[in-house]
Amino acid sequence: MVTNAPRDAGETAATRRWEAASYWPLTVAALAFLIAYTFQVIGDLRGAWSTVTTVVVVTTWVMFIVDYLARLLLSRPRGLWVRRHLFDIVIVLVPTLRPVRLLGALTRITTFTRTAGSSLRARLLIYGTGAALLLIWMASLTVLNAERHAPGATITTFGNAVWWAFCTVTTVGYGDYTPVTIPGRVIAVFLMVGGVVLVGLIVASFSSWVVERAARGHEDQLPATRADVHEVMREIEVERASGERVGPGAADGPDARP
Image (cartoon, rainbow, N blue to C red; front, top):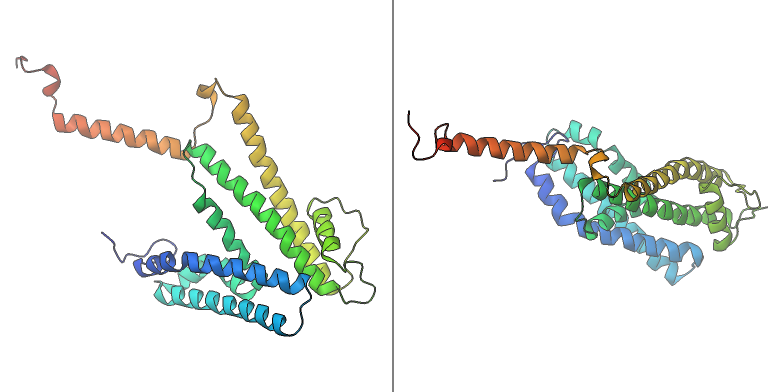
């Protein structure tokens, strides 16, 4: 039975229904934004094609604004919901972050049938790898858009921008390409910070996978996850409930004597 009791994030049954109905349309909108923005920047479009891509970008922006306002109006209490969904405000205000929604779709499409630990590890690896590639792609586009026509700029092609983004996100920093505009340098700062976090996440997930492979045949020495513990506790509760329904004298069999 669906109740109207708000969850800890201020969500209600109405917000959950809205999110379920709008999830894939917004995911498609995020993909459309990514494609349109990519063509707009790489092609340095002018005229009719520039108008088309701008319309797509603005339309996706309107869709995300409507989604945020609808969820806000349906939530109870609204103040709690706003505090728990600050990143949603950032996505609405910063258009280049909308493709982040595609990362959640990746884990929904991919199925995980192994242990809770491997499922969590797979999700982290997908999020980390996907976020790193998406960060590099969007940083390349935005820095190229900011730098291309600036005096003295060295990042003037998409190839240069991608090379610069890879060098920056991996903290290599050859210095052959550097942003000269203020927006370009701001993008570089965010890329440096995000790159350190994401590279660390990928390395940690991969290291955990290597440890799991090396420990095969010694499963009894592997640490249990919280989900594993909860599963064991549920099984114990089921067994205990079954024993209580049978009764204390049932185990003695039909020939038992008082």
